[in-house]
Amino acid sequence: MTQFFADIAPITYQGPDTANALAFRHYNPNEVVLGKRMEDHLRFAVAYWHSFAWEGGDPFGAQTFERPWHPQDQMDRAKIKADAAFEMFDILGQPYFCWHDADIRPEGADFAGSLRNFEEIIDYFLGKMESRKTRLLWGTANMFSHRRWMSGASTNPDPDVFAYSAATVKTCMDATHKMGGENYVLWGGREGYETLLNTDLTRELDHMGRFLSMVVDYKHKIGFKGTILVEPKPQEPSKHQYDFDAATCIGFLRKYGLEGEVKLNLEQGHAILAGHSFEHEVAVAAAEGMLGSIDMNRNDYQSGWDTDQFPNNVPEVALTYYHILRAGGLGTGGTNFDAKLRRQSLDAKDLIAAHVGAMDICARGLKAAAAMIEDGGLDAALRDRYAGWDSNDAQEMLNSDFDSIFANVVSGKINPQPRSGRQEILENYVNRFV
Ligand code: XLS
Ligand code: NI
Ligand code: NI
Image 1 (cartoon, rainbow, N blue to C red):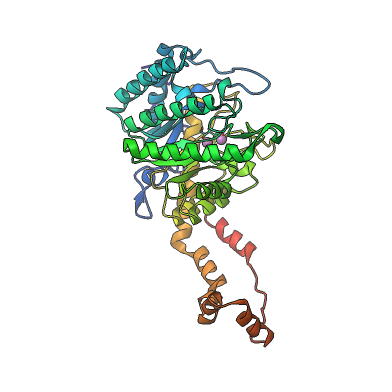
Image 2: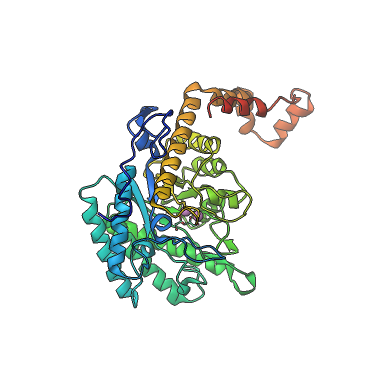
C-alpha cells in the first residue's frame, strides 16, 4: 500500500439521490442496458499519462502536483507510481487502463537501457494484474515528447528516426501482446508539419503509410489478436497533422490498402479542434465500419486548444453513445478517459472524483441513448424522411442514367415539393431523454 489514496474507500453505486461526493449515482456496472451489462458497454479505461505521469504544468508554469513518485526518473519511483495506479483502479473498479511506454518507465541512457526499464515495469504490471480484474485496453508509444521526435517519427526527414520509431513500436506492440492488450494505438503527435517550406508532404505520407503497413505485418507475425487503431487529431503539437479527422484517416487508410486492418480511436477534444461534433466523428467512422474506440475527454470551447478535461455534458455524451450503440457498440474498444485534472486540483481525492463524475456522466449518457433507441423516435423520423427512396421508381432511378431521369423531370412527372426537416422537433425529442 502506498499512502496516496489511503483514506479513500472503494466507490460503490448509491443511486441518483445520494449526496456522497465519492459514490456512483448512475454507473452501476451490473445494471443491464439493452441486454448487456453497463460495464461491458462502456469498458472504461484510465489514461496512465494524465493521471499519473503528468505533473500539472502548463505553458506558463511548471509542476503543481507533488506525488510520492516524483521525480519520475528512477525505477523505484516508477514502481511506487504503479502501486498507486493499481490502487486507484481498485478504488474505482476500473476494468481497463492504457499507457505510453514513456509514462510507465524512466528513459534509459540509450535504447537498450530504456527497453530494460520498460520490460521490468511490464512484468511488475503483470504481477499486479494476476490478482485483479483490471486489463490493458491499449498500449502505445510516446513518439512526440523526447527531442529526437521533434520533426516527426515515421514522417521524420531523417531515416534513423524512422528506424528508432519502428524499433520503439515493436517493443510497445510486444508488451501490449504480452499483457493481453485488446488494442494497439498510434497517435501521430508530430506526424505532420510546422511549415510546408521545409516539408515534402508526398514523401512523408508515403513513409507513414509504409510504417503503418509494417505495424500490421508485425501484428500478424506475433499473432496479436487485438485491433490496430489510429487516433485522428487536426493540430497541436504540429501546426497540421496528417491524421486530421476521421474522414482524412479513412482516405489515408484506403490509399495504403489498410482499411480492413486498422480502425479509429476517436477523441472528443480532437473532434472539437477539427471543427466537428463528437457524434459526427463517430458516425463517419461507423459508416465505414472503422469505429474502434473512444477517448472521452472534452475541450474547453473558449480556449481553442486540447485541454483534455473530464466529460461533464450529458447531452453531448448521450448523442455520442447513441451513434455507438447504433453501430453495434465498441467491440474491442472502450471509453478511455484521456483526461487530466485542472492544475489546481492537487489532491488524491480530486483524481478519484474526476473519474467518478466522468463514469457517471457516461452512464447517464448511455442510459439516455439506450432509451432513445428503445423508444425508436429518431429511427422512425429517419425512416419517414427517406421513405420516398423505398419506392420502386426511386430505386430504378438509381440504376438508370441522366437521359431517362431528364425525361421524367421534363415531362412534369417529377416535381419536388419541399418538406420540413423538423430539427427543432427532434431536438425537443432528445431533450426528453437527457
Ligand atoms: C493527444 C492524444 C494522446 C493519445 C495517445 O492529444 O490524445 O493522448 O490518446 O497518444
Ligand atoms: Ni488528445
Ligand atoms: Ni487521445
